[in-house]
Image (cartoon, rainbow, N blue to C red; front, side):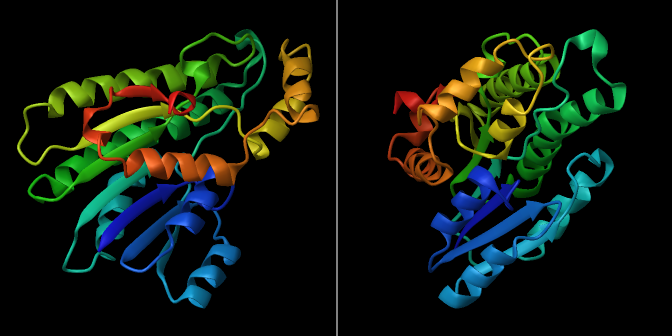
Length: 250
């Protein structure tokens, strides 16, 4: 059985990934703050295997235990394990001197600390498994370009990219290695984009550009993005990819 662990699974790209990966011989383990009844119902209708674990990824102290809970749902026979660190938050939006300290802490916790701890626990837990093991970190172009008003988001995604580079180096010569990539998916029509468009121009100077993306139909759908991500993850040359990539290059 192929195992997919997906964070931020209740909406956006995460939910779209779960829907498309629901199929025979797959077990989808969803992690999010709130359950998606839509996903649970779909899995029941298709008679496919899905587990939903409610957890707030900002609570860093419990993430290793969360990975242990995830493992308890595994069947005996495993063919591959894939961790998709998809959950993310855009807030706080605004100049860094105006950012609330709790919002900064939450941003780094969800966007960077959670993927780091989950990846660490993943590698530790499965290092003896002689099956394909993959970690997919959902990054952003904001981690590669500075945007005024997004200091926490940009910093956390830049950290995620570089963390992925380091882990990739560490795993190069490891027996039964884990292949890790950090992939920017492009500009997607999700709730995060809605939050960006609802922000204040004083806080985010480029808001007009993002409103235009929406008005001109320039945003990719979560469904199309999920489909392309799955194609990359399941491609024959996945293990040859650089650790930091952009989905728009495929």
